[in-house]
Image (cartoon, rainbow, N blue to C red; front, side, top):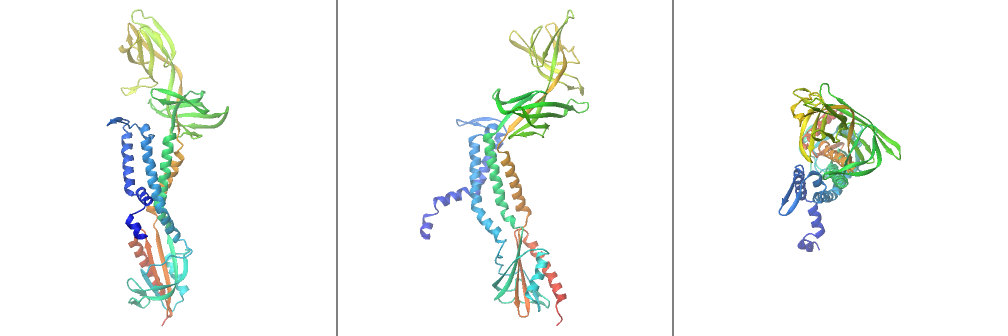
Length: 476
């Protein structure tokens, strides 16, 4: 039967498992994902051999090809984890008892106790090599033992190696850092959860914008689509209780802006929180972030005749068109504080005007400098005065159902890496056997990392044990 299997080769199932657990497949998938992610940051579109490739960030990460690559990477890591986990778990449980694993055939250090009791010798060795309070696993076994490698360390100097013989021995075993064998598997599980969170977040991601003035409340947010905003009902109401902006001294730059928000459900306040940049409010999976703000003054437009000096005044909210001599005017952009020539130039706005259905141009007007030439239109000097207005907060609303999984995956990923690299798996066996009226104690140690340093430490401890044993040895 085995010859037939070897002749026919591995089964299709085994071949499939080998393919999806391949490290080469992992590297190829990571390279493709990195390639697409790089071009996704360019925000460009390409036509390649008749195929339309959209590398714009949001579009790319939610696209079916990108999600398919993540799915293949998930399958690759899942199969690899399932394939390796049983062996790693078996190694982890092996060190936990109830029986100690078989000791190595040869010892690293050997100490001879003359005219000693086996229990007393084993206890002394455990104190040195395991430390106080350790709880080793003990068992009694028949073993073929020999002294080695090197010489026997005893009270009367070094002895030549003894021939192997079957003896009744007591084995004491202690393992430290055994969790490190599961480090790679913890890392894999973290990446798997991270990928699932990315896929769920990519398919269910929601992002919208909401503008609120103090005292205003809304239950709809605007989702950007092409050149318009599509209203979406949130299922609850958001109210802006207050909004404040503070500035740096002698600067038009805002130092901070705080928004007092309330969430209303069925007309009742269910949550209230003061948000600022990087301190959002969370409710039912939605995150409300302080994105930016607007200042909305009421504008008094002034059109002064350069011939007669007569002035026409029109008051309108910011952004609304007004009729003045020379056409239709509207403020396109407004700044409460404008910096120029190293100083604060005061309020300014960009004014656009149309005549006979055609855009005639734009001009930057400064409230503190009304007589600038660019504000002269068809014999009129156009100026403005910004009357007291109010601030409005602009909230960014994000809902990503994959965020909890992403955070969980990241935590496990970091934990797995730390377990793998910073925890050293060390195993020590102490084998004590009766030889005549004395006891031979053999010590063997194995370390997953730093075996040379670990062996050196065991040798130092063995020397200290020999010296103490020599002092306590009975006189001849």
